[in-house]
Amino acid sequence: MIHECISYSFDSNVFVIRDSKTILIDAGTGMTDSLNRFITSFKLDLVINTHCHIDHVGGNPKNVPIAIGEKDAEDLEKGTEKTIFDFHFPVFEGFKVSKKLKDGDVIETENYRLEVLHTPGHTDGSICLYDEAKKIMFSGDTFFIKGIGRTDLPSGNEEALKESLERLASLDIEKVYPGHGGVGKCDIESILNFWF
Ligand SMILES: [Zn+2]
View 1: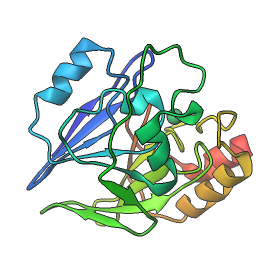
View 2 (view 1 turned 90 degrees about the vertical axis):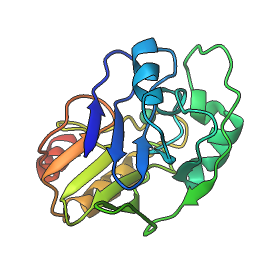
View 3 (view 1 turned 90 degrees about the horizontal axis):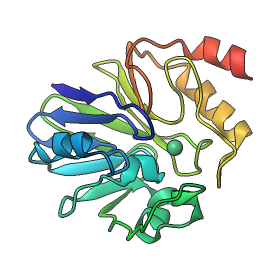
């Protein structure tokens, strides 16, 4: 099953797939106690970060393998301007990356099969995770139920985001778990028509 923690303020949403393996998808800023407690209440096997932004990775637990899109991996390890951009966070020590994800990689548990889709635009290493059989997608900040991610931050690119969304629009998706805001059904075509 999927546990959802829909966040407010700065933190990203946090999702946990609990199955034969327990997988955390994004982790918030790490500065919100209730969210940290939610994360540490699970015995995690893997963390997947949809991209390197501090509001998604700051709460990554220690001692759990972390996977992230290959183009955002170095930023997560070192904490570059791309990771932290204009936030005033005290210190970012970086996180060791165990797996650099590429388009087409698959992360499987007994009942879930998450395909990694490289969807640049919000950052150049952003990924979405798609389970074709379940028709669900974890979209990070690539798109939200009624909107799209910012493209004005380091490595952001509006044209790349448009192309990513055009690719995603052809997929059969019944439920989206985005990086911010509510979870639900989403019409990518109308997002494309509205924003581009
Ligand atoms: Zn972001």
